[in-house]
Image (tube, rainbow, N blue to C red):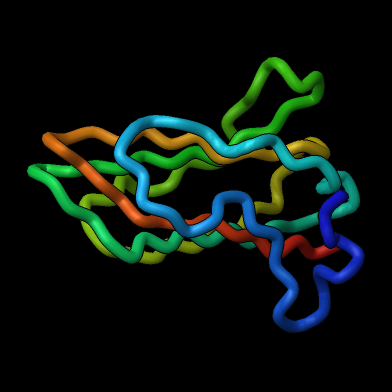
Amino acid sequence: MSDLTQANTPNSTITLLSSAARTSTGSGTGLAGFAAANNLVIQLEVTAASGTLPTLDLVLQDTVDGTNWNTVTTFTQATGTTREVKRINTPFSDSLRVTYLIAGTNPSFTFSVKTFADA
């Protein structure tokens, strides 16, 4: 269960992906508990990038059945350190996850994804 009941208090965030160095494509675990939220603020923070022409493409997805995932929003492709915030007020389901595609020669990105859910 997520901490949506605490979403409107300062310093209360839900981490979709913890900060870590990643070198290949992957996805986070689906997290449930977002059905009560009306709005989301999603923050991607890239604190390190290396390799030759590294790229990071990140997508927030939702699902209604736990199997089929749908795109909620896509972030601008990252090629270095950056921070991007997306505000979501379109309908989304109870379960969310982040997927990411890392490309380039010997690429590495250290990044995290957090959300603030406004119930």
